[in-house]
Picture 1 (cartoon, rainbow, N blue to C red):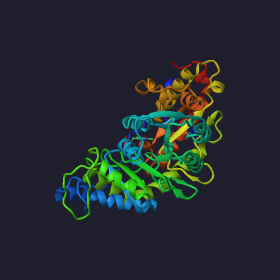
Picture 2: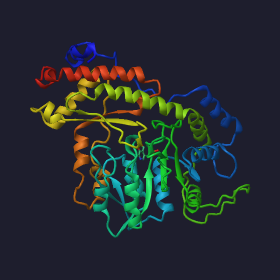
Picture 3: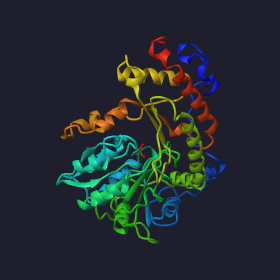
Picture 4: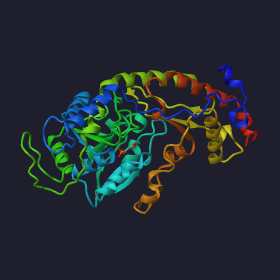
Length: 416
Ligand SMILES: Cc1ncc(COP(=O)(O)O)c(C=O)c1O
């Protein structure tokens, strides 16, 4: 235990481990990123509305090559990416799509945007990703697709999920919004053979300077549909001028060249950032493994975590037997934040309980693990995990150790 482990809690008036709550420090913009964006401004080619080697097409090629997939289509954001992928797979009104009960609300909202109904599967208590067993129970004759989410940067059990979905004739659309660089038994997330979607929103591991999304697939007909759907249903032919003829109902969901150029530049450094984050997080978690009642996020055998979000599950009933779970969680998070650790909650409720989605859900609640994980965990998010965050994460470890060595003080209500 670090020497600071014995100090008085900041919540009780002691000196905090960090002078203030760690600031948001992401994305990192370099001169190369600025030059890439400036080159677009100077080119005057801002939109990707015609074929040709624009910044969008360069990014699409680079990301497809990075993953080892045939096609990549840039779109306006990660939610639209899921929506267009569903449409390209023929999902529509009357269909059901299984999503995990624990994910960002955009996963399920994209399903509603195409007129289909989200159905929820519970998650695994260790990986926090869709449980194949719960998926099996969620299938009905109306199920048309499954969206496993590689949550927090860890691949879902994609082989098992794909087998189950294909045996029911369902499409699999992987929501890899949080999982750039993650791998499943050596295969990059997004390259498993399904259609997969990524977000480039600025908090993501591969960010843009705003909003953006990418869809990848090995299926040319899916990719061609996506290109049409993102641009008013038009056919965009290489080396031909735009004709303004719409062959199907589509959207204006194009990615801008400014956003694409910024991400393309970030992609050059992405492997180094990914490696640094993995090293920093491993050293951080190694400090915390023995704290009683704290379950650190882990990397199952054969998986490569992208560490987008770190979720810690706490045995609150054991550590604070006299407090309700919610009161204990709030107290613990206040103590951590007072020491400078930016502990936050990620997802306040199972997706089906979101007010906007509640009335659409006809299922009996069947997501006890999701509820338990949400009740008993706190997270540290990517915006605090930049590539040079190694020393900062060690300070977080000091602070967490300090709070843990003062649990009795917290428990007795000696702080208010
Ligand atoms: C799991 C997941 N799916 C979908 C999205 C939606 O992406 P975007 O914000 O780019 O629309 C996000 C974004 O946070 C996400 O985390």
